[in-house]
Image 1 (tube, helix red, strand yellow):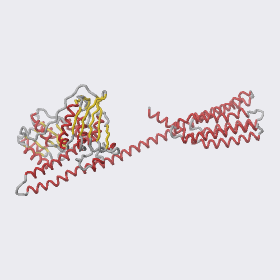
Image 2 (tube, one colour):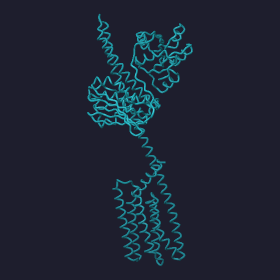
Image 3 (cartoon, helix red, strand yellow):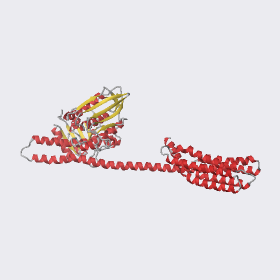
Image 4 (cartoon, helix red, strand yellow):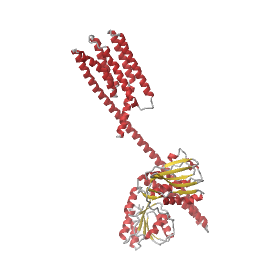
Length: 588
């Protein structure tokens, strides 16, 4: 409905523009015909004053129409359709001028003069179909006062020949208007087709621009991701030979070995953070993340977020404050936690002096959640772009004291906020800090927020763990790790090797299975084989780097836990420590 109305409005504008474009040619034709008519009337001994007066009126009206055209072209502050009444009125005035011939020079006793008037009126009416045909109301406003006076004088004369001429004049007027209406419709159809083509071309240009922009963004995205992945890999490639060199020495320095191990772990953590960010972006792009709103108590949630950044804030000497107002919002707790965690992490990372505030304030039936900091801030030019993937503001790139982020956090925050139905509000001033906020509906009851569990790498039970992976390096690493934790690993690379373990009586208590094995073998086939052979249920997890919606759906349908590579030792330990749970964990 709105599109149709907009099209009609644009059509009207184009009609007025066409009408205006025809004015110069119309005036030239009018003046030529007017002077020729005046000359014929003067030669035919019509009153000079009447001829001169009529001609002066036509000339003055032509000048007025030129002034109208000039004002129309200079008026850039109003839409063209605003001038439609003025152009219609000018056409009506022109019709009155030509129609005045029937009152001034209607002389039945002078057939030649009468013929001049009739021919001129019919000629000007015919030419008006072209000059005014783009806008039918203008043609109608001209035709009626132009022809009706002559037809009326003929019909009122009582003479048979003139009455016949009057009837023929009316018939000619009717046919001229029908023809003019058809011309106007043809103009409208042509204009509508042109406008629709322009609209389609515009939409095509927009889609092409979007495609090109997406292609450039993808190239930039991959280049940035490649760079950020190469950094920790490069660091690890330097630490490993250093560690090998230490191993060749007769005595090892535990402090140096421990330092290298910590550095390696830091590099691994950096890679894991980037891959997790990429996983979040992938899930958001694929629409695999669907919100499940429920009442969320902000006191517990904000404290949980604050606990994550407390250690870094203390190390930097920052004041970290939380003001929750004991409010409850209606939102998906996991998505809301992701938003606040990213914002709080950025705030602490890019703040060197002052502090960070996590606040919740009620505004009517809405709650405004804010993360404020007194950090380096963001320039006005960069602020609209900070939610783009891998974009970092100049302040963040140029400040060498900052622990460099990946430029993905705010992109995740923006899309996650949109899932909750709230835009991401942001304001910032370089050198003075930033404020990021979302608004969520107020709720009355709260669902409990789980407190963050402290990572515990020491196992509480010894388990036999089946590891199925086609990568020998991963099997070896898992073997070292599980034995280090006191567990018994069973290693397999295929369904056949799993079958061999089962035939030998080595029944696992847990299973960690890669999703994609060699050939056409699928990790879910291993899961099914274990369920068929074992008379009791064990905890099983699919371990994969595949983040596609199809893979996520398959894991969920299989009813097993999904662990996405790289799996942190803490996450792996939690999975193993829950082995006493009788039913399989189906969370992903």
